[in-house]
Image (spheres, rainbow, N blue to C red):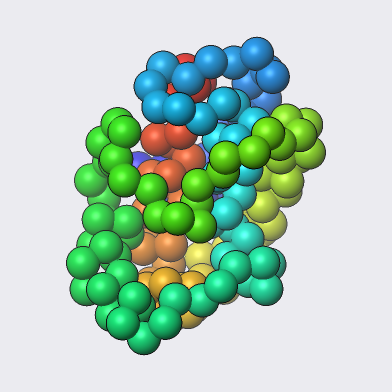
Length: 151
């Protein structure tokens, strides 16, 4: 798995994103390319712009930490057409260039902050995560959706 904290690997994600166009079509799923970019931005918004999202309540957080977390932060890739958490569902049209620019900026910021900034950092939904778990979560999600759009 790539390391989102490594400059070369981060640039590889950016290069893949730069291959997308507003006309890029998904190989599976229902999202358009602009919705996919906005969807990928949600993971980063929860870190850098948490006020945009409602935090899960105690029961939801318990379920997320104990049942969802292992699938999200583990190394096993996501399956196609898997379930999506409600806050990640993007149903309206988005500005492709704006979402693309935001995602690239989030990737760069994460890489520049480095693994040490994320080691033990509190996750919106899963509690404190190790840097490797943050990496797995970001890398897996990006790989899944960039592959979905053939890049």
